[in-house]
Length: 423
Image (cartoon, rainbow, N blue to C red):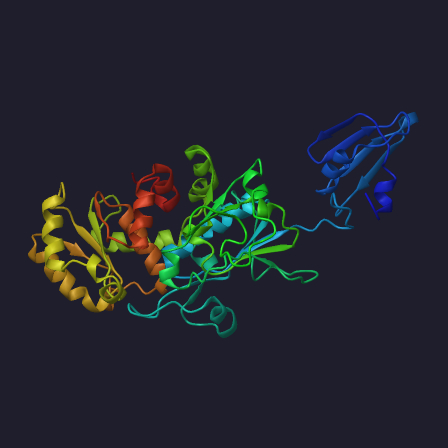
């Protein structure tokens, strides 16, 4: 490798074999080692054993070596992203970022915080406020998700542990559209294609049309832009950064077959789950309310607060929804657990569901018997409780409910969320 005197000593050829991290080269005569073998050797910490004539054995330990490009030290490349919106959105953003990091063979820098709303009608703080002002509605991600499980899927470094040896500007993923505006989010569509044969990438308009919003990609209609994931494969920058509004659904990677799309986007669901602490809180609440973890129960999610002003058409009256649910359930006599984001309306919710005929209606313990935890610990614990119900009545239009339904659709996901011993 260029500029590395150590490797110049090994440009000789001999039969090469490997056992674990030990490489064995038999050297009867001088020769050149092919570049692809050197590349393999130089991308990891290895011990090289050279079997020389006259049985002379030379052991060399390489702690850090060069990359295939000839740098003196191996430097991993990274991927970062900025979390935004509510808890379930942030879980899906983590999913998208993990998938991209795996696809690009980069290390995922895990954000330090998840953000929560200060009240049912509020909005989450900006992520930078978490980093600079220690905002009270920012919570350590490591308290909420199982990082060890995530590391089985993709290499991860915590943001607070990451130290860049030589800071450089990241490559920032951009779409040319301000997706912070809802009117534009619902109008313009970006679709990343896996594009292994690079046909999409090679079809990009050249030179770039400065008047087109789809400057990188193929315009597939007035409001649809198809981009090649190989764009990001080719990025040489040490860091690729996905800013706000560039992950979530717009960050998914598409492929020609449903099976391949599943691999690229959904396998990661099996590695992103709650921390053991969150699962323990959920079990504590269930045991406190129901007496035993094996008790059968039904559950419902009633989203109030912001939905009353932003998505009022999706919010039925508690009276009508409770009556309809009582008729629809196979076993309405079972205890009913209700999760809501608006504790101020809890008495009205309880009254409506009791009047509909439910014999035991339960909500998050408050007051003297309350379970005091952080906002997001409670949110994730309540999601966990909803997942274990016999039947679940989801809140239309809610990603919180959507995540619960996703987990309930898979035994492996239920196991990841702590139900392996109970179902």
